Image (cartoon, rainbow, N blue to C red; front, top):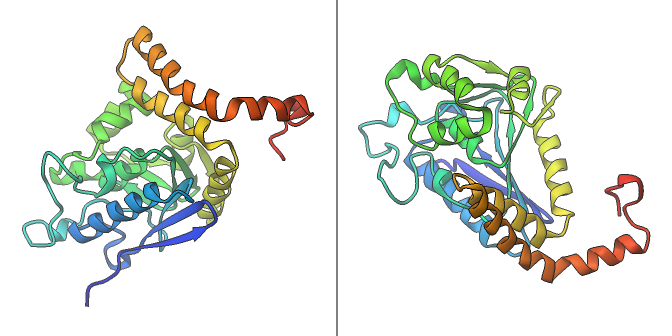
Amino acid sequence: MTEQAVRVEQSGPVWTVFLHRPARRNAVDRAAGAELAAAFRAFDADPGADVAVLYGEGGVFCSGADLTAIGTERGNRVAPDGDGPMGPSRLRLSKPVIAAVAGYAVAGGLELALWCDLRVADETAVFGVFCRRWGVPLIDGGTVRLPRLIGTSRAMDMILTGRAVGAQEAAAIGLANRVVPVGQALAAARELAAQLASFPQVCLRSDRASVLDGEGLDETAAMAREFAHGQQALAAEAAEGAARFAAGAGRHGSFGP
């Protein structure tokens, strides 16, 4: 019987994608990678879904690629195009994903966390390029996304040494966006997801796309991309939002209804 490595729970506009391979500490093989990619494609295609949370069950976010599968038919997909070895790491979604990290997010698991837009870590979280020990390279965006998040110097430290980075250091260097008490990563990530889902979505997604599209562009080109993305939001949502403000909403910085 083939195990179901990935399952999805839906609560209104928030999807939670669970990685469940307890015998392998949530390491990802070919089948699990395909299931993850399929789950996130389904999320992106669902008009009722706004934000997703990725969570590794059993106290480990993801320990990377399943090295026991290398050289077998279960081995991770390795090709220059299509899905990445970890599954969704090459997907460019139109909606945000939040990683809820408890325990180890290492090697390819770190790369999955980096693929997400935000990372909520509990105090047990450990990030690291643990594959440094085995001669297994970062080929799911680790050498690209990590420097962009935390800077080249800090990224080089993690990439070259493979050392463990705990939750508090991860927050200090910008790798984790939130640190929460032990056992609270999933709940906190879902709460954050619900907050994001409550905002006008055309504007949120266009601003997110502008950030992603602006990577690597010079300032003039990036500003032009920002302006182009913003036009859709101005047409779709800005007038209604301005009317709500004029009617008294949002006083003193309130984000409530």
